[in-house]
Length: 131
Image 1 (cartoon, one colour):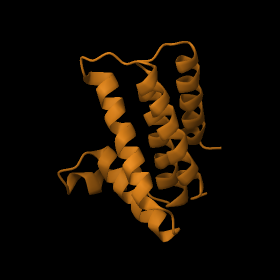
Image 2 (cartoon, one colour; image 1 turned 45 degrees about the horizontal axis):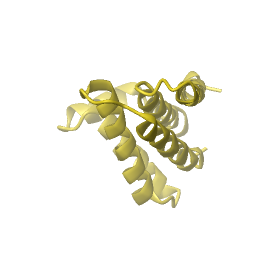
Image 3 (cartoon, one colour; image 1 turned 90 degrees about the vertical axis):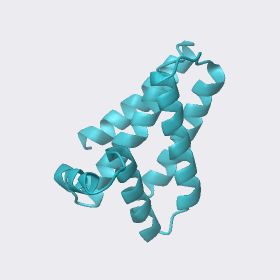
């Protein structure tokens, strides 16, 4: 198993553990990075791309590296006849929750925490179909 795939599993487990311990603020962070790391695993090991490839694509756009990777994974999912519309909605929602949790001056409670885990698990189901 690749290190990124292993980290993905660890981050999801951490999100679930933190949620169960009522430590809500970092849950969205762990849940999002579980998906991000799995997408990087697909990029590197399934699509046979490199970090340099991703950096080059990112330099040629106004989007950040996360958005570029998400868009590239969506293109790959389309080749696998996956439902990219729901995946895109879920991963973007999860990314927004992560941003809100990490950077915004707001209280993060059990609703946001459990929603982040739900979005992460749903996104990972789609991503795992690429394997």
